Amino acid sequence: MQYGFGIDLGGTTVKMALFDREGDPRYKWEIPTDTRDGGSRILNDIAESCLKWLDTYSIDKKDVLGIGIGVPGPVTAKGVVNRCVNLGWGRFNIHEELGKRTGLPVKAGNDANVAALGEAWKGGGKGFENMVMVTLGTGVGGGLIVDGHILHGVHGAGGEIGHMTLNRLETEQCTCGKYGCVEQYCSATGVVRLARRAMASFNGETSLDPEDLSSKAIFDAAAKGDVLAKKVLDQFFDLLGEALANVCATVDPEAIVLGGGVSKAGEPLLEGVRKSFAKYAFHANSGTVFTLATLGNDAGVYGAFKMMLDEFGK
Image (cartoon, rainbow, N blue to C red):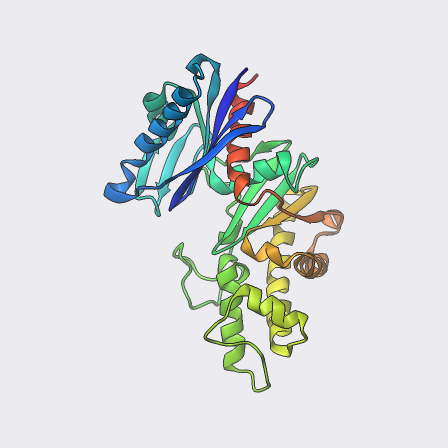
């Protein structure tokens, strides 16, 4: 029996899984992400945990194909990490550093791209060789799957959909340092930003509470007929549809898979985005399928394992 690790490295938690070669997770667990001292302990903790599990279950290292890991920042195809701000990391080769600590081959990628591969392999994008995954959470993440493989990009920044510019007149700064990014309007926090701005000039009645605003509250209020909430979602859908139409004009995928916290809105989200997308899409992209992610928090470990399997399992 051959095995491999799939690892999803986040700012607070490292999700880990040991898979068999067929892609079935035998064991899943988590360890905390220790970001002290510039994140210098993180790789040691990951290596120690991997080796401990092999020892606990008497798995010989020669039966392990390798480690796949998704990292919250740009990663080149050769494993060079180019700054992970929330981990405190600068620039280094994670293939080499984690490989030295474990004695195993390592394949790394950006976490959003890796999650996209997981959804393409076992989740909402299953069956699509060319797919875009968009994660609508605190920010907006993107992952591009082309002919079944991650498009990393030369600088490891392939799929950074959240930082395309939508509004050149924006005066508030995005977390990336730019202005008017997709993330500022189409994330969970972005929907709330749109709602606060709309409330400032709205004279009618609304059930929205400025002290308790969330994307869920806005979707729920719109479903009950709240005029302001519906207006906010119309703007949200319009902006997201425009952004995704631009992405499709570039990579022409079969499907777009929507994940992240906002995707829990379900069919109302799909319906709204489809309508807006149809307004902005180049005619050749009009057949693009929209669907929801299904793997949830496991997308990263599945995708990390699959990325590693594609690299070392031939």
